Length: 172
Length: 182
Image (cartoon, rainbow over all chains, first blue to last red; front, side, top):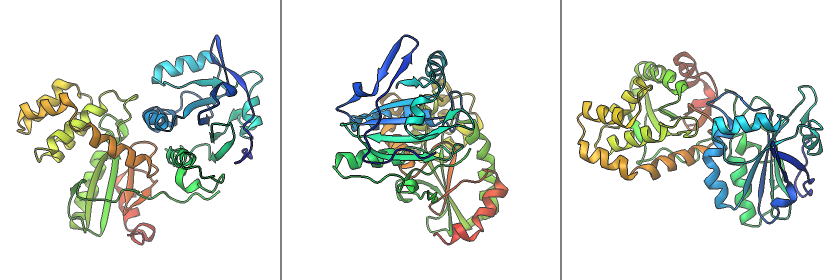
């Protein structure tokens, strides 16, 4: 897997956000966007990456950023998962054709048929300003995202990958 | 891709709850959630480590409540802080971990009574969220230090990614990787 890097325009996409609604990336222009690719809904609870992001949503909102989760799970699965885990950000279903968006971003895991655990921070113009691919069993945390959003606020460009130390996680 | 072990971004300071001497050779710091079962399981392990290490170690506790998974975690954390405001943080900390399955408001009041707190002040602190900002500060200091779940331990400021059992913690504490980082 070779995730798209900084300064590349994030490929546009349209995916189901609920069983009867779609969300397109271009609808999120004019604000920073955090794309969170992850392997599957219903991962173990206490170290759950999305539960952490839910907790940090107010910090993302301070930067005006919209957080979006993407996995190959279907829209009904996402709906049940969102309700159960009380998640208040969109989960998009990269389900049909399976994993197409993950492939466009260079983070599709062909061996397991899922998205890898990858993070992208996009600026208000839809340009990737930071990306990070985590080992699949490792929760990358949120520090790298917050650092990238802070550098957007400061107008400083951020190289991809080099900030791995900020977001390196652990297996639990 | 470099996977450097994250370090504590907010050093141990006077605002922290610390058991032992701040200049002890080993500082074990935990980010925990009173409703997290893994933190509950780690609690007696930390006690064993403290007994074994004695004066060679100090233990610091910071809050990391994941409130959407654990709806009582925030109130429990604030209850510990409210007890701390009356000088009894560690008594409340221990009770909360020993009785994790009973963390409703009335349970918290019962525990406050058991450890002899001024109940009026304790209840008023909880109702008005006096200690909520402190809990949030702990949480965000954890986020910026690479905490991604609970419990997360730091030994002398370096994140410990091993198993949270006493034997593994003790082994790590005597290893060069952690002692050299002090």
